[in-house]
Amino acid sequence: MTDALIGLPMLSFLLIPTMSSYSTSLNLLFFYLTWSTLVLSHPPLRVEVVASLAVRVLFYIAPSLFFLGFDALIPSVAETLKASGDSALPFKNANRKRTLAMLRILGWSTFNILLGVLVQALVELLFTRVLLWRSALRVTTTLPLPWGILKDLARGYLLREIIAYVLHRYILHDWHHTVSLSRAHRDWYHALANISAPFPLSASYDHPVAYLVRSFLPTYVPAVLFRFHLLTYILYLTLISLEETFAHSGYSTMPTNFILGGIARRTDNHLLCGGEGNFGPWGLCDLVMGTSVGADIVDDVVAEADKHDVPERMAKMKNRAKKVNGKVNDTKGGVRRRTRNRSED
Ligand SMILES: [Zn+2]
Image (tube, rainbow, N blue to C red):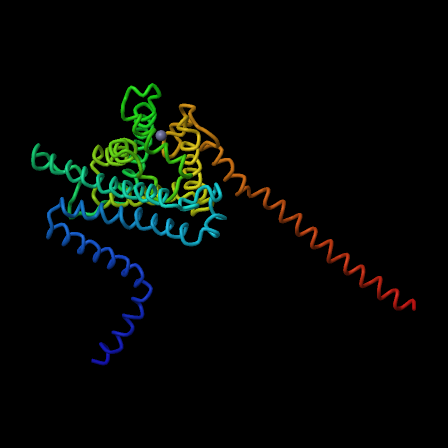
């Protein structure tokens, strides 16, 4: 009995260091249980549609509306944060006509997002009910492995870049306007340049079909081709939603200025130069095909390397240290001189 009483606290004492890894495993276990319950208790289509919609609302519509509210309510502060100053404020000199035009743009942007989710649901229905294939995305109770997630994200992003570039450049910017869709893209999305520089929520503003071609298909097609696990797709869609939010926010400083800042500058330039270049979202294909306008992705890398140049920084620090040292010596000399002066007196 006493042995057991002494043994128990001893045991827990020995267990404490391993507790942190236990909590991680426990969290994973709870996540797995919640996820498998969710998948088992609801039809896969509903899980997929609700999850995609939630990601779009939480990581694109909500933060964009927040930025837009900030621009509208505190324009004096927002103006100093914008890359193109007060011309990027959508509600500047607001009159009735302008406000109505803005509301129309916001309405279409939101409609396009919903349209994307609707198309996604229709594709799933077509796959599972009409063609009787397996679902377009993998909705299973098993969790994807970290390596699998990374691999899917990498090839998903790469294919998205290529599809977006090809569709945007050759279909939406067919300059002879033989494709009527290119006229729609010019009259809708590129007319934004007359109203204001890119502003929050303008990422999804376009003619509905042009939006599907420019933004929805490049995002969705890789996920279907590689048959992403739904959880991987949710992560992928979250990252892209945040990218679109920041790239069109018009702010000059943003988190990870290197990646998001570069994307935002290229998006601005595509709009401001009337669509002469910068067709891909990341600018990778533009670099290869020589259609970059303004700073390309290599310039961004060089700028970032300069910013983090360690040898230069060390040299600066040494210089600063020398200066401080010199000042200390000077003051020491001054004190000595003064004391000498005093002793001479
Ligand atoms: Zn364009």
